[in-house]
Image 1 (cartoon, helix red, strand yellow):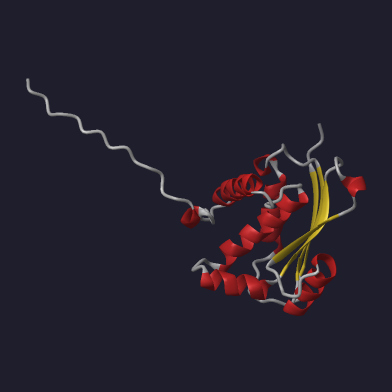
Image 2 (cartoon, rainbow, N blue to C red):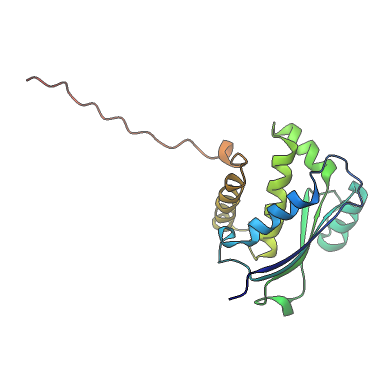
Length: 174
């Protein structure tokens, strides 16, 4: 079987200087398209990751979602004709919003950016977070992918700590 073909383009019309190099962003994208991204590895993918200004983010959000604010990330899968033939779509990320959120959440900018790239790819793969069960599944997958990429689990602070059961063992009387 031939290897997967992932065509990934990175665009930066926002001219953000905070972004890591395109190869790193392509790596995050490709990783989320691989088998660790759930539902098996994507054999064929064409994804554009576009870093947009606040103005462009607001315009896209208003046009496609009817909401008048700049979101951190938007995903635009190509038409339904492509479904089942791979993953094809665009991801728009606003670095200014990512920076603001990273600061508020006490996270490194690059870690939060990687999270949003992975999040956007998962949307292109058909995941969503509308229902609680689906949100939990998507969050777990994001955690798995980001930890594998060397980042901290972005959801760790929001999960309750695992219960520890302590059992008292009586001292031996022998």
